[in-house]
Image (cartoon, rainbow, N blue to C red):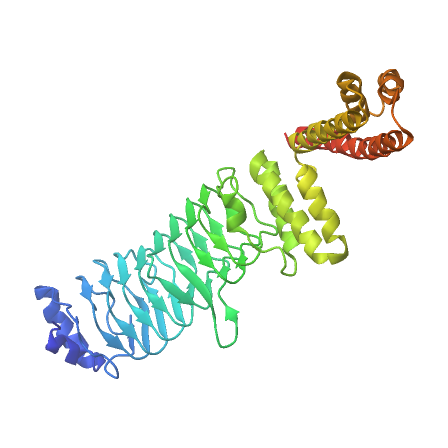
Length: 411
Protein backbone atom coordinates (compact mmCIF):
# COMPACT_ATOMS: atom_id res chain seq x y z
CA UNK A 1 0.00 0.00 0.00
CA UNK A 2 0.95 3.64 -0.37
CA UNK A 3 3.41 5.37 1.86
CA UNK A 4 1.05 7.93 3.42
CA UNK A 5 3.90 10.26 4.20
CA UNK A 6 4.82 10.29 0.51
CA UNK A 7 1.19 10.95 -0.48
CA UNK A 8 0.94 13.81 1.99
CA UNK A 9 4.19 15.29 0.70
CA UNK A 10 2.66 15.66 -2.77
CA UNK A 11 0.35 18.39 -1.49
CA UNK A 12 2.97 21.12 -1.91
CA UNK A 13 6.38 21.72 -3.41
CA UNK A 14 7.85 22.65 -0.04
CA UNK A 15 6.72 19.40 1.59
CA UNK A 16 7.88 17.43 -1.42
CA UNK A 17 11.37 18.94 -1.45
CA UNK A 18 11.79 18.13 2.21
CA UNK A 19 10.49 14.61 1.77
CA UNK A 20 12.58 13.80 -1.29
CA UNK A 21 15.79 14.42 0.64
CA UNK A 22 14.80 11.49 2.85
CA UNK A 23 13.74 9.35 -0.11
CA UNK A 24 17.20 9.71 -1.57
CA UNK A 25 18.26 7.47 1.31
CA UNK A 26 15.30 5.10 1.61
CA UNK A 27 14.29 4.75 -2.04
CA UNK A 28 10.57 4.72 -1.15
CA UNK A 29 8.43 6.24 -3.91
CA UNK A 30 5.41 4.04 -3.22
CA UNK A 31 2.04 5.66 -3.94
CA UNK A 32 0.25 2.41 -4.78
CA UNK A 33 -3.49 2.26 -4.14
CA UNK A 34 -3.75 5.93 -3.18
CA UNK A 35 -6.66 8.19 -4.11
CA UNK A 36 -4.73 11.16 -5.47
CA UNK A 37 -7.70 13.17 -6.74
CA UNK A 38 -7.20 16.73 -5.63
CA UNK A 39 -3.87 15.83 -4.06
CA UNK A 40 -1.68 16.02 -7.12
CA UNK A 41 -2.47 17.28 -10.57
CA UNK A 42 1.06 17.91 -11.78
CA UNK A 43 4.59 16.63 -11.35
CA UNK A 44 7.18 18.72 -13.12
CA UNK A 45 10.85 19.55 -13.03
CA UNK A 46 10.12 22.55 -10.80
CA UNK A 47 9.46 20.12 -7.96
CA UNK A 48 12.66 18.15 -8.43
CA UNK A 49 14.82 17.14 -11.31
CA UNK A 50 14.10 13.46 -11.01
CA UNK A 51 12.77 10.51 -9.07
CA UNK A 52 15.99 8.76 -8.16
CA UNK A 53 14.22 5.46 -7.52
CA UNK A 54 11.39 3.60 -9.22
CA UNK A 55 8.04 5.36 -8.78
CA UNK A 56 5.09 3.13 -7.97
CA UNK A 57 1.72 4.63 -8.93
CA UNK A 58 -0.08 1.29 -9.33
CA UNK A 59 -3.84 1.19 -8.63
CA UNK A 60 -4.04 4.94 -8.00
CA UNK A 61 -6.92 7.27 -8.79
CA UNK A 62 -6.18 10.63 -10.41
CA UNK A 63 -8.13 13.67 -11.49
CA UNK A 64 -6.25 15.84 -14.00
CA UNK A 65 -2.69 14.59 -14.14
CA UNK A 66 0.39 16.07 -15.78
CA UNK A 67 3.94 14.77 -15.77
CA UNK A 68 6.06 17.55 -17.25
CA UNK A 69 9.72 16.92 -18.13
CA UNK A 70 10.38 15.00 -14.92
CA UNK A 71 12.94 12.22 -15.19
CA UNK A 72 12.38 8.70 -13.85
CA UNK A 73 15.74 6.96 -14.19
CA UNK A 74 14.43 3.74 -12.60
CA UNK A 75 11.07 3.82 -14.36
CA UNK A 76 7.48 4.51 -13.38
CA UNK A 77 4.49 2.19 -13.13
CA UNK A 78 0.82 3.21 -13.54
CA UNK A 79 -0.62 -0.32 -13.68
CA UNK A 80 -4.28 -0.53 -12.66
CA UNK A 81 -4.71 3.22 -12.23
CA UNK A 82 -7.73 5.30 -13.24
CA UNK A 83 -7.46 8.80 -14.71
CA UNK A 84 -10.73 10.77 -14.51
CA UNK A 85 -9.47 13.99 -16.14
CA UNK A 86 -6.94 14.78 -18.81
CA UNK A 87 -3.65 12.93 -18.63
CA UNK A 88 -0.45 14.24 -20.16
CA UNK A 89 2.91 12.51 -19.92
CA UNK A 90 5.98 14.51 -20.87
CA UNK A 91 8.88 12.60 -19.38
CA UNK A 92 12.59 13.00 -19.11
CA UNK A 93 13.26 16.56 -20.16
CA UNK A 94 15.85 15.23 -22.61
CA UNK A 95 17.38 12.88 -20.03
CA UNK A 96 17.47 9.08 -20.19
CA UNK A 97 14.53 7.55 -18.29
CA UNK A 98 13.49 4.10 -17.23
CA UNK A 99 10.60 2.05 -18.53
CA UNK A 100 7.11 3.58 -18.35
CA UNK A 101 4.58 0.82 -17.61
CA UNK A 102 0.84 1.37 -18.06
CA UNK A 103 -1.16 -1.86 -17.76
CA UNK A 104 -4.87 -2.40 -17.14
CA UNK A 105 -5.37 1.34 -16.65
CA UNK A 106 -8.43 3.38 -17.60
CA UNK A 107 -8.42 6.89 -19.05
CA UNK A 108 -11.63 8.90 -19.11
CA UNK A 109 -10.27 11.74 -21.26
CA UNK A 110 -7.83 12.05 -24.15
CA UNK A 111 -4.29 10.98 -23.27
CA UNK A 112 -1.25 12.88 -24.56
CA UNK A 113 2.10 11.12 -24.42
CA UNK A 114 5.20 13.07 -25.35
CA UNK A 115 8.31 11.35 -26.66
CA UNK A 116 11.65 11.10 -24.90
CA UNK A 117 14.50 8.73 -24.09
CA UNK A 118 12.23 6.24 -22.31
CA UNK A 119 10.52 3.08 -23.48
CA UNK A 120 6.75 2.76 -23.08
CA UNK A 121 4.66 -0.34 -22.48
CA UNK A 122 0.88 0.06 -22.71
CA UNK A 123 -1.09 -3.15 -22.28
CA UNK A 124 -4.77 -4.00 -21.81
CA UNK A 125 -5.83 -0.39 -21.18
CA UNK A 126 -9.06 1.46 -21.89
CA UNK A 127 -8.87 4.87 -23.58
CA UNK A 128 -12.35 6.38 -23.66
CA UNK A 129 -11.41 9.41 -25.78
CA UNK A 130 -8.31 8.45 -27.74
CA UNK A 131 -4.54 8.38 -27.38
CA UNK A 132 -2.09 10.87 -28.92
CA UNK A 133 1.66 10.35 -29.24
CA UNK A 134 4.02 13.14 -30.18
CA UNK A 135 7.69 13.93 -30.73
CA UNK A 136 10.79 11.85 -31.35
CA UNK A 137 10.74 8.52 -29.51
CA UNK A 138 14.25 7.35 -28.69
CA UNK A 139 12.96 4.25 -26.86
CA UNK A 140 10.65 1.46 -27.97
CA UNK A 141 6.87 1.87 -27.83
CA UNK A 142 4.44 -1.00 -27.31
CA UNK A 143 0.66 -0.67 -27.36
CA UNK A 144 -0.67 -4.19 -27.06
CA UNK A 145 -3.22 -6.48 -25.46
CA UNK A 146 -6.53 -7.98 -26.51
CA UNK A 147 -8.24 -5.93 -23.81
CA UNK A 148 -6.82 -2.65 -25.06
CA UNK A 149 -9.69 -0.56 -26.36
CA UNK A 150 -9.30 2.91 -27.87
CA UNK A 151 -12.49 4.86 -28.45
CA UNK A 152 -11.44 7.69 -30.74
CA UNK A 153 -8.17 8.04 -32.61
CA UNK A 154 -4.76 6.55 -32.01
CA UNK A 155 -2.57 9.20 -33.54
CA UNK A 156 1.05 10.27 -33.77
CA UNK A 157 1.16 12.90 -36.51
CA UNK A 158 4.69 13.76 -37.74
CA UNK A 159 6.33 11.76 -34.95
CA UNK A 160 9.62 9.89 -35.25
CA UNK A 161 10.13 6.36 -33.95
CA UNK A 162 13.84 5.57 -33.74
CA UNK A 163 13.29 2.24 -31.98
CA UNK A 164 10.74 -0.45 -32.63
CA UNK A 165 7.03 0.37 -32.53
CA UNK A 166 4.56 -2.42 -31.78
CA UNK A 167 0.83 -1.82 -32.04
CA UNK A 168 -0.82 -5.23 -31.86
CA UNK A 169 -3.99 -7.07 -30.82
CA UNK A 170 -5.96 -3.91 -30.02
CA UNK A 171 -9.22 -2.34 -31.12
CA UNK A 172 -9.58 1.25 -32.34
CA UNK A 173 -13.22 2.17 -32.79
CA UNK A 174 -15.48 5.14 -33.35
CA UNK A 175 -17.41 6.99 -30.68
CA UNK A 176 -20.95 5.68 -31.05
CA UNK A 177 -22.75 8.93 -30.23
CA UNK A 178 -21.22 10.91 -33.11
CA UNK A 179 -19.66 8.16 -35.27
CA UNK A 180 -16.31 9.95 -35.11
CA UNK A 181 -12.73 8.86 -34.56
CA UNK A 182 -11.70 5.26 -34.70
CA UNK A 183 -8.72 6.13 -36.85
CA UNK A 184 -5.11 5.04 -36.90
CA UNK A 185 -3.42 8.35 -37.73
CA UNK A 186 0.34 8.19 -38.36
CA UNK A 187 0.45 10.87 -41.02
CA UNK A 188 3.96 12.13 -41.81
CA UNK A 189 5.65 9.81 -39.30
CA UNK A 190 9.12 8.36 -39.71
CA UNK A 191 9.75 4.74 -38.73
CA UNK A 192 13.50 4.21 -38.50
CA UNK A 193 13.17 0.74 -36.93
CA UNK A 194 10.77 -2.18 -37.52
CA UNK A 195 7.12 -1.29 -37.03
CA UNK A 196 4.24 -3.64 -36.27
CA UNK A 197 0.55 -2.87 -36.84
CA UNK A 198 -0.69 -6.44 -36.53
CA UNK A 199 -4.00 -8.05 -35.57
CA UNK A 200 -5.77 -4.71 -35.15
CA UNK A 201 -9.40 -3.81 -35.67
CA UNK A 202 -9.56 -0.28 -37.06
CA UNK A 203 -13.09 1.01 -37.60
CA UNK A 204 -12.11 4.44 -38.89
CA UNK A 205 -9.56 5.53 -41.48
CA UNK A 206 -5.94 4.47 -41.16
CA UNK A 207 -3.88 7.38 -42.45
CA UNK A 208 -0.19 6.79 -43.23
CA UNK A 209 0.12 9.54 -45.84
CA UNK A 210 3.68 10.90 -46.23
CA UNK A 211 4.95 8.29 -43.71
CA UNK A 212 8.44 6.91 -44.21
CA UNK A 213 8.99 3.22 -43.40
CA UNK A 214 12.73 2.54 -43.34
CA UNK A 215 12.52 -1.01 -41.96
CA UNK A 216 10.27 -4.04 -42.00
CA UNK A 217 6.59 -3.29 -41.38
CA UNK A 218 4.01 -5.90 -40.44
CA UNK A 219 0.31 -5.30 -41.18
CA UNK A 220 -0.73 -8.96 -41.02
CA UNK A 221 -4.03 -9.77 -39.37
CA UNK A 222 -5.22 -6.17 -39.25
CA UNK A 223 -8.72 -5.37 -40.46
CA UNK A 224 -9.13 -1.91 -41.96
CA UNK A 225 -12.77 -0.84 -41.73
CA UNK A 226 -12.15 1.77 -44.42
CA UNK A 227 -9.65 1.85 -47.23
CA UNK A 228 -6.36 3.12 -45.73
CA UNK A 229 -4.46 6.17 -46.96
CA UNK A 230 -0.83 5.72 -48.05
CA UNK A 231 -0.62 8.72 -50.38
CA UNK A 232 2.99 9.92 -50.59
CA UNK A 233 4.24 7.24 -48.20
CA UNK A 234 7.41 5.22 -48.69
CA UNK A 235 6.99 1.53 -47.91
CA UNK A 236 9.92 -0.73 -47.10
CA UNK A 237 10.42 -3.70 -49.41
CA UNK A 238 9.78 -6.00 -46.42
CA UNK A 239 6.26 -4.68 -45.83
CA UNK A 240 3.89 -7.57 -45.14
CA UNK A 241 0.14 -7.80 -45.59
CA UNK A 242 -1.95 -10.95 -45.39
CA UNK A 243 -1.67 -13.35 -48.29
CA UNK A 244 -4.19 -14.91 -50.66
CA UNK A 245 -7.89 -14.53 -49.76
CA UNK A 246 -7.04 -13.35 -46.24
CA UNK A 247 -5.95 -10.03 -47.74
CA UNK A 248 -9.52 -9.30 -48.85
CA UNK A 249 -10.67 -9.78 -45.26
CA UNK A 250 -8.16 -7.10 -44.30
CA UNK A 251 -9.66 -4.63 -46.77
CA UNK A 252 -13.44 -5.15 -46.89
CA UNK A 253 -14.21 -1.55 -47.88
CA UNK A 254 -14.90 -0.85 -51.55
CA UNK A 255 -17.70 1.68 -51.06
CA UNK A 256 -16.24 4.61 -49.13
CA UNK A 257 -15.25 7.81 -50.91
CA UNK A 258 -11.73 7.61 -52.31
CA UNK A 259 -11.38 3.83 -51.90
CA UNK A 260 -10.53 3.34 -55.57
CA UNK A 261 -7.68 5.86 -55.49
CA UNK A 262 -6.32 4.53 -52.18
CA UNK A 263 -6.11 0.96 -53.49
CA UNK A 264 -4.50 2.27 -56.68
CA UNK A 265 -1.76 3.88 -54.58
CA UNK A 266 -1.11 0.60 -52.74
CA UNK A 267 -1.12 -1.32 -56.02
CA UNK A 268 1.53 0.99 -57.43
CA UNK A 269 3.68 0.89 -54.30
CA UNK A 270 3.62 -2.91 -54.06
CA UNK A 271 4.33 -3.16 -57.76
CA UNK A 272 7.50 -1.13 -57.26
CA UNK A 273 8.65 -3.87 -54.87
CA UNK A 274 7.75 -6.66 -57.31
CA UNK A 275 5.25 -8.00 -54.79
CA UNK A 276 3.15 -9.61 -57.50
CA UNK A 277 0.41 -11.26 -55.43
CA UNK A 278 -0.23 -8.15 -53.32
CA UNK A 279 -0.16 -5.95 -56.43
CA UNK A 280 -2.78 -8.13 -58.08
CA UNK A 281 -4.92 -8.12 -54.94
CA UNK A 282 -4.95 -4.32 -54.72
CA UNK A 283 -5.68 -4.14 -58.45
CA UNK A 284 -8.79 -6.25 -57.84
CA UNK A 285 -9.82 -4.04 -54.94
CA UNK A 286 -9.33 -0.97 -57.10
CA UNK A 287 -11.68 -2.33 -59.76
CA UNK A 288 -14.23 -3.48 -57.19
CA UNK A 289 -14.25 0.05 -55.78
CA UNK A 290 -14.59 1.47 -59.31
CA UNK A 291 -17.64 -0.73 -59.91
CA UNK A 292 -19.20 0.51 -56.65
CA UNK A 293 -18.64 4.10 -57.76
CA UNK A 294 -20.26 3.42 -61.15
CA UNK A 295 -23.38 1.34 -60.38
CA UNK A 296 -24.42 1.36 -64.04
CA UNK A 297 -21.34 -0.71 -64.87
CA UNK A 298 -21.57 -3.00 -61.85
CA UNK A 299 -22.91 -6.03 -63.75
CA UNK A 300 -20.30 -5.62 -66.46
CA UNK A 301 -17.53 -5.60 -63.84
CA UNK A 302 -19.02 -8.61 -62.07
CA UNK A 303 -18.87 -10.49 -65.36
CA UNK A 304 -15.33 -9.24 -65.91
CA UNK A 305 -14.40 -10.66 -62.49
CA UNK A 306 -16.23 -13.94 -63.08
CA UNK A 307 -14.67 -14.69 -66.46
CA UNK A 308 -11.14 -13.31 -66.06
CA UNK A 309 -10.53 -12.08 -62.48
CA UNK A 310 -10.46 -8.51 -63.80
CA UNK A 311 -8.05 -9.42 -66.59
CA UNK A 312 -5.47 -10.67 -64.10
CA UNK A 313 -5.89 -14.39 -64.81
CA UNK A 314 -5.34 -16.28 -68.05
CA UNK A 315 -6.28 -19.63 -66.53
CA UNK A 316 -9.85 -18.62 -65.68
CA UNK A 317 -10.93 -17.60 -69.23
CA UNK A 318 -9.10 -20.64 -70.63
CA UNK A 319 -11.10 -22.86 -68.28
CA UNK A 320 -14.32 -21.15 -69.43
CA UNK A 321 -13.27 -21.63 -73.07
CA UNK A 322 -12.68 -25.35 -72.59
CA UNK A 323 -15.85 -25.75 -70.56
CA UNK A 324 -17.92 -23.93 -73.20
CA UNK A 325 -16.43 -26.09 -75.97
CA UNK A 326 -17.29 -29.29 -74.11
CA UNK A 327 -20.84 -28.09 -73.38
CA UNK A 328 -21.46 -27.11 -77.02
CA UNK A 329 -19.98 -30.40 -78.22
CA UNK A 330 -22.39 -32.26 -75.92
CA UNK A 331 -25.33 -30.26 -77.30
CA UNK A 332 -24.26 -30.95 -80.91
CA UNK A 333 -23.99 -34.68 -80.19
CA UNK A 334 -27.38 -34.65 -78.42
CA UNK A 335 -28.99 -32.99 -81.46
CA UNK A 336 -27.36 -35.58 -83.73
CA UNK A 337 -28.61 -38.46 -81.58
CA UNK A 338 -32.17 -37.05 -81.66
CA UNK A 339 -31.88 -36.91 -85.46
CA UNK A 340 -30.60 -40.48 -85.64
CA UNK A 341 -27.11 -39.33 -86.63
CA UNK A 342 -24.28 -40.88 -84.63
CA UNK A 343 -21.35 -39.10 -86.27
CA UNK A 344 -19.97 -37.91 -82.93
CA UNK A 345 -16.48 -37.19 -84.24
CA UNK A 346 -17.48 -34.53 -86.78
CA UNK A 347 -19.92 -32.88 -84.35
CA UNK A 348 -17.27 -32.71 -81.63
CA UNK A 349 -14.69 -31.37 -84.10
CA UNK A 350 -17.18 -28.69 -85.18
CA UNK A 351 -17.38 -27.50 -81.54
CA UNK A 352 -13.57 -27.51 -81.40
CA UNK A 353 -13.32 -25.45 -84.58
CA UNK A 354 -15.87 -22.95 -83.20
CA UNK A 355 -13.65 -22.46 -80.14
CA UNK A 356 -10.99 -20.99 -82.47
CA UNK A 357 -13.04 -18.87 -84.91
CA UNK A 358 -9.97 -17.49 -86.66
CA UNK A 359 -9.04 -21.00 -87.93
CA UNK A 360 -11.58 -20.96 -90.76
CA UNK A 361 -10.22 -23.93 -92.65
CA UNK A 362 -10.76 -26.29 -89.71
CA UNK A 363 -14.40 -25.30 -89.46
CA UNK A 364 -15.02 -25.62 -93.22
CA UNK A 365 -13.73 -29.21 -93.17
CA UNK A 366 -16.20 -30.20 -90.44
CA UNK A 367 -19.30 -28.17 -91.29
CA UNK A 368 -20.60 -30.11 -94.29
CA UNK A 369 -19.98 -33.51 -92.70
CA UNK A 370 -21.56 -32.44 -89.42
CA UNK A 371 -24.70 -31.05 -91.08
CA UNK A 372 -25.24 -33.94 -93.50
CA UNK A 373 -28.54 -35.75 -93.01
CA UNK A 374 -29.95 -33.31 -90.41
CA UNK A 375 -33.38 -31.73 -90.60
CA UNK A 376 -33.70 -27.97 -91.23
CA UNK A 377 -34.61 -27.40 -87.55
CA UNK A 378 -31.54 -29.28 -86.31
CA UNK A 379 -29.36 -27.47 -88.84
CA UNK A 380 -30.69 -24.11 -87.65
CA UNK A 381 -30.11 -25.03 -83.98
CA UNK A 382 -26.52 -26.05 -84.65
CA UNK A 383 -25.96 -22.85 -86.65
CA UNK A 384 -27.29 -20.65 -83.82
CA UNK A 385 -25.20 -22.48 -81.23
CA UNK A 386 -22.15 -22.10 -83.46
CA UNK A 387 -22.64 -18.33 -83.70
CA UNK A 388 -23.01 -18.05 -79.90
CA UNK A 389 -19.89 -20.17 -79.37
CA UNK A 390 -17.91 -18.16 -81.95
CA UNK A 391 -18.71 -14.85 -80.25
CA UNK A 392 -18.12 -16.17 -76.72
CA UNK A 393 -14.90 -17.92 -77.72
CA UNK A 394 -13.56 -14.76 -79.34
CA UNK A 395 -14.14 -12.82 -76.11
CA UNK A 396 -12.61 -15.58 -73.96
CA UNK A 397 -9.54 -15.83 -76.18
CA UNK A 398 -9.11 -12.07 -75.86
CA UNK A 399 -9.30 -12.42 -72.05
CA UNK A 400 -6.72 -15.21 -72.14
CA UNK A 401 -4.36 -12.94 -74.06
CA UNK A 402 -5.11 -10.03 -71.72
CA UNK A 403 -4.39 -12.18 -68.67
CA UNK A 404 -1.04 -13.31 -70.12
CA UNK A 405 -0.14 -9.69 -70.96
CA UNK A 406 -1.03 -8.39 -67.49
CA UNK A 407 0.80 -11.23 -65.83
CA UNK A 408 3.97 -10.52 -67.78
CA UNK A 409 3.65 -6.78 -67.25
CA UNK A 410 3.34 -7.22 -63.47
CA UNK A 411 6.43 -9.41 -63.45
